[in-house]
Image (cartoon, rainbow, N blue to C red; front, side, top):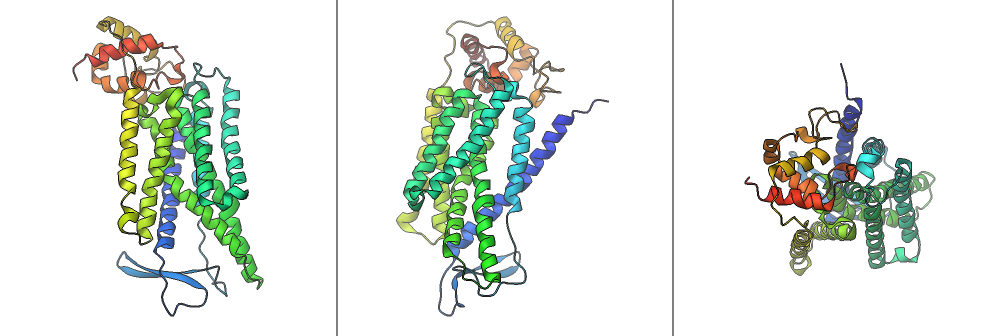
Amino acid sequence: MTIPWLDWISLMIRWLHLVAGIAWIGTSFYFIWLDQSLRTRAGLAKGVLGESWSVHGGGFYHVQKYAVAPEVMPTELHWFKYEAYFTWLSGFALLVVTYYFSASSYLIDPGRADLAPITAIGASLAFLIGSWLIYEALCRCPIGRSTAALALSVFALIIVSAYLLTQIFSDRAAFLHVGALIGTIMSANVFVVIIPNQKKVVADLVAGNTPNPTLGAQAKQRSLHNNYLTLPVLLLMMSAHYPMLYSGGAPWGWLVIAFIVLAGGVIRHFFNTHHGGGHGLALAWQWPLAVLLALGLIFFIATRGPVVSTNTISDTRALQIVTAHCAGCHAAQPINPAFSAPPGGIVLDSIDALHRHREQVLAQAVTSQAMPLGNASGMTLTERGELGQWLKTQKP
């Protein structure tokens, strides 16, 4: 009996990552909505900044927010932190299991940077840690006092990181790493600023001291950053399922990521404005701009399509290319040690199989050049062009 332990471990970690991520994003979205929905009225208790009424599950809820904190601490106080911690820990564990254990297949692209696995792993860790350190410095320096300047600086940090990552890693790994470094920033915001600041406020109240209002302002700033970064992170993390996003390749992959970050931020701004009671012109521009950004991305990717051969490619030649570069993984018994079964259950051992899976092969091996993994077999652009020509001439 053979048990693919690594696959099972990966599955369980991914499940945990999804559950923790849903819980974290859910609470983040809820509290941003709650903060934006607060309204003031006469007769609110001392120190109350605003209140919000809502109905859910057959019950009515009344929530009040204090400008700093109540004069007397309640006997029971709910904290929201472990969702963020377990999301990052499970995500990093998944990065280790998938990308570090199989660095040669998933992380390294020798056509861009022929790195040793240990060097590639070191570069990955350097990006995750270094991006957070730079972000933290930006927030704490004078730039952090200006919302616009800080937003532009963080956007620049993400795009510069994206450019560098697309120069050294495979497209799949580069896109995921941009999502991972943003996720690291978001989790560190909770661990380093939001929760510690809240604990300091609670400690001051218990000691009978007046809490510093700056602590709450800092925590709110970081929470708002997390809110705007959530939608781009989600798309970047699932980008492996949509390899056409990689069509920009090393020269233009960073621009695709820029489109994603901008569109996600604009969509999130719409909901934040709507929750805050905005109307009219304040809500009139976000969706049209998001649609324009999406269309711009689609047409840009279309112009980055592969150069296909102008020659007539025979069935024999097409199968020869696939056998040399795809069948090592997509076989009943894969040769590639990263797989115990053919990825996606796709076996490419005949012309009939190529016909059945022509769209997937075209997307993965021609349009995006995401396969073979790490281009370990050295598939050339000429071969991709020949395969693309053959696939495009086949009827669905």
